[in-house]
Amino acid sequence: MKFIDEASVELHAGKGGDGVAAFRREKFIPKGGPSGGDGGRGGSILIRANQNLNTLIDYRYQTVFRAQNGENGRGKDCYGKSGEHLILEVPVGTNIIHRDSDVKIAELLKHEETITICKGGKGGLGNIHFKSSVNRTPRQWTPGESGESHSIRLELSVLADVGLLGLPNAGKSMLISSVSAAKPKVADYPFTTLQPNLGVVRLGGGNSFVMADIPGLIPGASDGAGLGHQFLKHLRRTSILVHVVDIGSQLHGLDEIIEQANQLCEELSKYDEELSQKPRWIALNKIDLIDENTISEAKLRFSEDYCYGTFNSDRIYAISAINARGCDALIGDIMNYLNYRSDESINSDEQK
Image (spheres, rainbow, N blue to C red):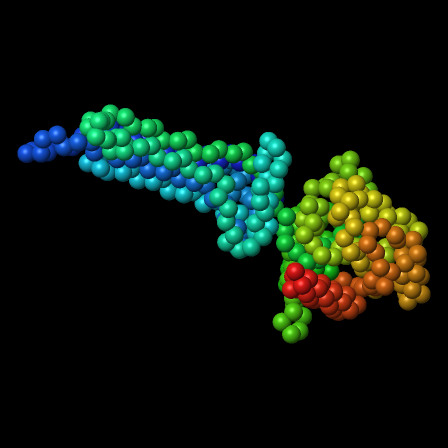
């Protein structure tokens, strides 16, 4: 299934049914009086999060949605039937943004979390509401109200605890496939990853976290190079960014590798300064291709020359994603860090 993470749609809630002017007409009952019922309420449009969805493809080709109108009132005190609500399902993590004002209306972060985005119109009043001692035969009635209409933009940001950041072919897809059950495409050419991939990393004791792999970012992405910044929004909800760096390549020296890593960090900062300040760890990948002295030198150089974002020089890991060497230490420390963050959040809420 094609991965679609943005869609623009027009929503129109149902119109309320009109009231009616009618009079009771039965044998042996003279002057039966008014009997016109109210119109039914128009159907509303709701948006509900569904954890079983992972793309907005349902809104790629159908872009206009209308809820059912309410029925008109009838004689004999019969009210019109209300229109059925229209429920649109989206993946968990979807942002709902007003297209004209660019204001965020809501974000759906839990399964079955629901928001009413367009309210249906009220039904009109029948003439039974207008009778009085001085108006025995009212002929007044009111039309139903129009339902609300909105043009919105849906933006999906995947829910993950850890985001992988790096150049194409740095080994991000291989890493996520080594530590989780995810099976992204892995090949020896750039941009094999064309859409975000999620993997659940499971450790002992029932502990787990979600890792997100996005297409590689390259210098010049802010000007549209490569896939640009198209998928960086999927890292906004992560707690940690792991910058995967290929230090096993024979094509580039260590100076050039560090320079490229810092250029990538500059691109991240251009896109979103807040995102660039997330805690950042470094995974020096493909150590199976180099010796121990080169690994030690790379760690030292990165601790001195890599200075972007919230970076701690103690968080530099040497790994080989292809054979999982060093990966246990990385994911173990990530799990400990996430548990610590969770405990801090709980304590903070209790103090409030």
